[in-house]
Image (cartoon, rainbow, N blue to C red; front, side):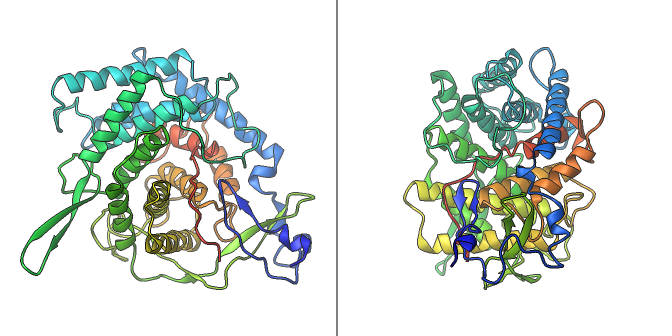
Length: 456
């Protein structure tokens, strides 16, 4: 391999996918198929584009700050939502988005938000931790988002400038544990224990002798142990991973069960075989083209909303594969593998199966790719999907989905949809949550993982 071709090996956002680029063409050569591709620079290499992103982040942050109530919480569309209210979860999501957008960790409104949440947690514990449907009850979503917000608080820079990091491509997993104050660390332990205890029942095995074994594998909204779903499971996994990075471990059985569930209940029938491609940069100008990465195609297979049930290709929005839930599937698989690896407990078979599941999920996103709609659920959860796309791609370490620079395309669309006051509004999401999710995409908020999935 020549030196110019070796330069095409891509180092991706936290872990490397190493693969040889086929010989016969360098990054600077331009065939007829490359001309349209090379009109755009890679999104994270274009200063003018990043300047527009920064301006949008500043406006979005100002909007969120203006909507915080005097007692520290945020009102949202989800206050009257089924199984709600989700005031705690939305408030934590707002804090997470603000901190990831560069708001100073010592900002008084940030402190006010955490004081609001901690006060509700203490009151709930003092009252015996009542279960839903009591309005004061904490749920999976509330706990998971509070954990990721707390980690962000202790990793946030002590700075006053809102906006992107100096180099958006610098996204390395934190090596050192965050130094969390004693009271907050104890709070995080309690939150993490809540999630471990309340993992839902979604798998029941009957042996040949008639013995029944119940296995906890995923999480639900109302903690009834019967209606587990991938959305709640995602927030539980994000929360537990954040706690682990702060020195609070999770039982390996939980990670192994979640990983097995997502591998087992991924779409079984491949919709299409898809060649894996990698973005190649013209280092002189920053323009991009795309080249084959692997000689073995991936099988496009997605995930649906409900866990413990096989995906129905022609099902309703809860049972058929969708963009948002496929992003969730990729993310949970990669985080679970990463946590098991950190414990020294990741088995070779789990690594092989998990890597295939993740790449097949990326292949599904490739054939259904969009940043203007949630694939296969076009009229709902657009910004939720976009934040999921950011998370899945950062965790997988991919700068492109097929021939799509997912960050540039997604950010361009998000910028075009920002309202004059600085907010975003998505159907079924409202303004506060949509604005949080848009900011999390623009800031590339996800913490990468250490685990590497094979590139070829």
